[in-house]
Amino acid sequence: MNCVNHEDREAVLFCQKSKKWLCEECGSHCLSPELQCKFRLDCIIWLREHEGPAKQS
Image (cartoon, rainbow, N blue to C red; front, side, top):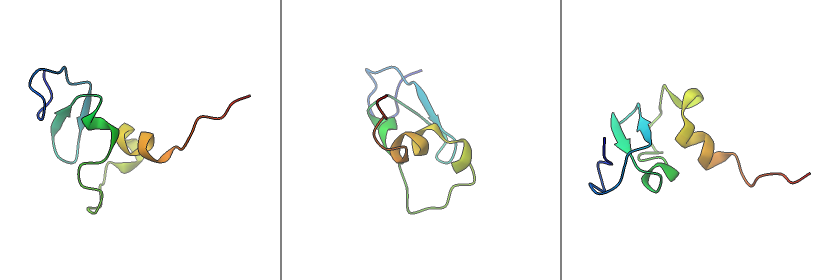
C-alpha cells in the first residue's frame, strides 16, 4: 500500500477519520485537526503530534 499523497512512498499509518493510508511524513500531523475525531483516543497520528519532546533520564 502506498501513501495517498506520495505514490512512491510506502504507507505506514492509516487515518481512520479520513480513511487514508499515509507515509511517515504525511502521518506526522492530523489531516483535519479542526474536525472532531471519534477515533482520537486511539489515534497514533494525534498522539505523536501532542506527546511533546521525549524525556531523557
